[in-house]
Length: 332
Image (tube, rainbow, N blue to C red; front, side, top):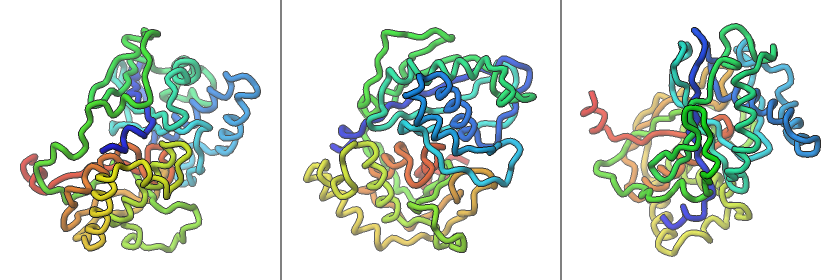
């Protein structure tokens, strides 16, 4: 797809090693990553640069993810465009075990220098802190080492930090994430399942009626394409929603228009979408089965899964996997 060359994104794989006998993670780690690291960044920056960070962090108020299970997650983002995407894991970790998550810097914020000069020092503070705001019994904060950091170049991860040692010569570019990626090319079977890896909410405002039923909230294929178009404007600064078509080649425009036209007729055969747990961002979790997902659409859905779609993407919401029913049978 010609469009990927217009998308600015740096993907970092962060690996932390637990250095205490027992660590208990919060129910949704991305919230704590945002709150703790964001606060530490604000406290390290000069006054002028810290202002937008302090303003953003103030929205947390007295929110405490650990003790307020039923609290509504504030609609917060960092002053820079980011995604904090935590890989599936367990809640309790012992000494020497690894916790992995992905940091995505987006659009104008896709700046490798900002990771090195601002975010990494805050991580180092978080790894050693004894501040009682964070350092509770068995909490993660103050109980880990930064084991490794990698930057994505296509399907490969290149080391920036190894065994705690930083390679200052490495420079990640905003376009290397897509080097060699061929969305949809390896497709061998018809895809029909979409499995949400993180919660999602494709409605664009918080004013969506709370009485909306689950069936009304299950996204159809055109809804996913619409959310992708909306999302891509963040990755391509200066482009409005309508202008997304301007960066597509004539061929890609034809392909996408054909895919959109075809998807309007494709039903959802079944789903198990349900509300996400209390205290989590997003609104819905689960999976859905379509009659089929057109091959033409697969590259765009694969791209959407990398970029995250909908609301609260800062917390990692809005990413999914595509599966084939045949693959599911063979994997059992």
